Length: 331
Ligand code: SF4
Image (cartoon, rainbow, N blue to C red; front, side):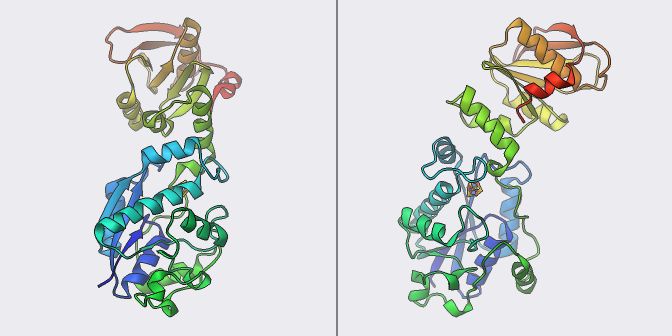
């Protein structure tokens, strides 16, 4: 039996593409690329159980966070609409999938890409460019659009019957939905919302890091996914949690040297200050925190301390005026 490796994301297209080839009696193993740039909504474990339940194939999870971070900093082929370097990212994924394919004795790769579904990385020309640049020409089968593309090795060798493949193109997903019913696929992720690099707010936060902390690492990226962000000075940044869960996340991501802010005797959030805080920056950060407590009208006692220190200090401050607050907000 010929084996193939399928790049599955949990979205409908990649599940359908895999299912179509499973129907042709090809043995398939899945690869899911996880990354720090994905939203917190879907954990690796829930995604992997979704994929394995729907497809009943073995699944390998490969974390590409570090490589993708370097690409995001300097993409060879530029960005899409926001900070999404989709061409470079797809090339990275295909190269990684190819390495895994060789380890597992696979003969070709499968992806759920559809010609013209995404303006930047799924134009017909872009797809062949991606294959060429990754050195994988004719090894990547895209079952949903195969009839619009040059035959791949799998079709030429007769492992896969080209006539049973599809000719989908464009953004309409009508056919995919009816095919999902036909093939019994019940659970899949919605197309939007996975990769934060396509999100305008997240991209603004990333740009702030590029500007003020260009040597940032993955831990800094994790922080960008939490809370409201404020740039106080080129050296000082404040993050205010939006709920209890984010308070816990901020605490767990805090580092030696960070400042922690919280209101005394008031319901309210936790703030994390990173960088160099002068006296006036601490006052400003406290006033921002006061704005996000339940008691917005009056002055408030705000506690601040170094993370991992027991020694608390405080100051009493009114909440910051809305206009100044807005001018400091990154996204
Ligand atoms: S949307 Fe994000 S994960 Fe998908 S190809 Fe683009 S950069 Fe990569």
